[in-house]
Image (cartoon, rainbow, N blue to C red; front, side):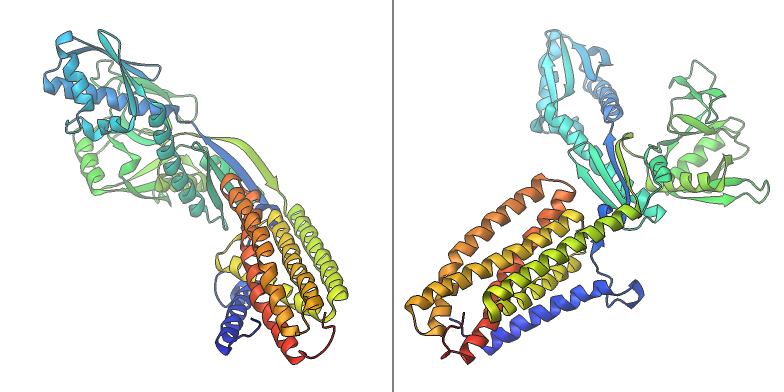
Amino acid sequence: MLYFSKLRIIFISIICLFFIFIASNNLFSPDKRFFDKKINLGLDLQGGSYLLLEIDNTPVIEQKLQNTTSTIRTYFKDKGIRIGNLNLSNQKITFTVEDQFKKNVIDEFNNENSEINPYYQRFKSHQFDLIDLGNSFELSFSKQGLVNLKNSSQDQALEIVRRRIDEIGTNEPNILKRGNDRVLVELPGLDDPKRIKSLLGKTANLTFRFVSNDNQDSFGVEKLKHENGLDEDFVSKRIILSGDNLLDAQPRMDSQTNETIVSFILDRVGAKRFGKATSANIGRQLAIILDGKIISAPVIRDTIASGSGQISGGFTFQSATDLSLLLRSGALPAPLNIIEERTVGPDLGQDSIDAGLIALIIGFLLVIIFIFIKYKTFGLITNVTLIINLLILLGILTLFEATLTLPGIAGIILTVGMAVDANVLIFERIKEELKNEKNNIIAFDSGYVKSRTAILDANITTLLAAIILFFMGSGPIKGFSVTLGVGIFTTLFSVYFIARLFTSIYVTKNKDKEALI
């Protein structure tokens, strides 16, 4: 029926006023807004930088398998199970087993209650493939295991990338997963991404190890270059401390040497370990290694038990600030490679905004002119409803702080077209009903009821397409699908509540008038 109760009228009015109020927040400057929420402009509208990063998981796989090798050796030794020729090569662990112990090995890997299972429990989910080669076994990550490892590595990388960018204070960054080994970074308003690229390209794997020229070192030694690329030293493979033990790092000026340094504070475990290591090794050089390069190798003069220290290395204040940032945010689980980079200037972004707004205004004006000429009073009702529909749509996008892109504007324009299409279907159906029904109220009500199926079918199929685009698409396509999907709901609300309310008021007052439409 065209009848609307007072309660329903109040409900519709509150919904409209609420979202119009929310949408109006975008018109004010930040210091005059009612609240913090607003629609964010995407990269293509306000300019900025786009970086697509790919995670190199090879070091992660190697490290996990090295840890596995050590665990296998220790565990089976404790169990009295003799294995030999334990070797890691080409991302595969191989070891020989005497026939009498083969069944024990297989049982240990598959036994849920085995002590080895804090790591190997994942066999049940096919984390690893264990292949029997006769007198030896071969262990490697399964396809599912590699997927799980990549997902875990990607989650860690995403969090650390977000921390690093937040530390810099970049305005409204957009950081998203892409596949299972890529991270997308969009930085609106940033047209010079050199510093960001430098920070994101560093793994920031910090370790403290002793300089050791003794080839008999029980942990082994390796030759590493200093950051200047000229000097080099042999350092022990034994890690005294890692970046995981750092609580904080800040750039400072050394009051004695007037040199820029990085001061750091260790957690309780790190402070205890550092104090013990320095007290037992006074006079030795302690190498501070970042991403495989020695950035400093001071001589230990005294026990450092305070849990704090400093790193020097000829830093500028900017480089010390960046190093502090990297250490605070943590090490990436794997190196990141920039495989795609785009920079959109603010002028191009403004051109996109202008082009989008002009298209929206021209399209909107043509639609409202046509609909007014075609349906007169009901065309005016449709046009008022269209404006309210757009304001509700903008209000919802503001409430969720959506990012508006150029394709998003296209979705809004399409929403206008769909709203008009729904009203045209209703009015044409009403014309058909008026040919057989003299009562205007009944004819109008029948027009709304009998056109409902066609309108719902059209909007539901479009909504399904928008949902598919949202989950299968990326970037700009998602922006289009979001505005289109939200626009479908606002269109149905505006057609069957707002436009129908205005129509019922007009028809009820002119129920005896001929040729209403």
